[in-house]
Image 1: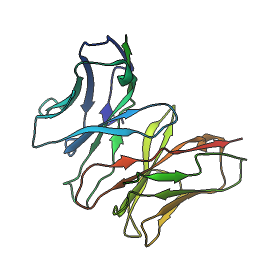
Image 2 (image 1 turned 90 degrees about the vertical axis):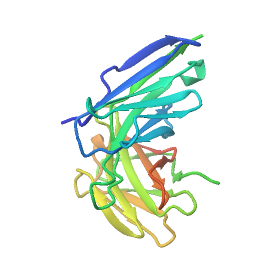
Image 3 (image 1 turned 180 degrees about the horizontal axis):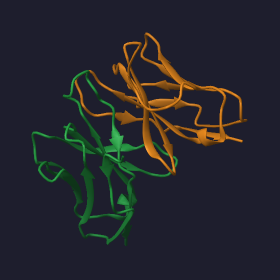
Length: 116
Length: 112
């Protein structure tokens, strides 16, 4: 059972436009969410995170929105740049569930291509 | 500040052999976790160590094991390698007061 789902395997946008990557989760115990960017043969690079007590977190061109009632989060990249082309992973953890659980459950990823 | 360092970056092993991968966390980080990435299963949690104790374990067979040393460096071992163990193995570390997990570059294991 996939607890974190990224239903779009790929997304293509024009440079300068907005990229919106979506992620859905099923486990209501998840209370901390992260987005990672990954190039082939490299480790994931942390981008931005959000705690379940917030509904929005912004860092430069990256904004993450969390809709707890819908169990949905999204990553907005504005403006998109060709260097943003990579696979983006959504991850979730249940950190307040007891036992200091920092295990990350990942989605399958979305390949973002930003065209010049 | 150096990031998470993993060695070796690439290795090829034969079925039935065993392999040990090494990880040095970010300085000051005591939590180290390991993940496996394969094309079919994506990124999956293997285990987490904190202060030399395994605190959490994923759904992998007992052939996958790990340990952490007093300096927080960690190793993971896979015994009796199978072709399906070919994957990118990622180590990650977290600071005591932080929620964010930072990954290393990974170790590419190919089993032939």
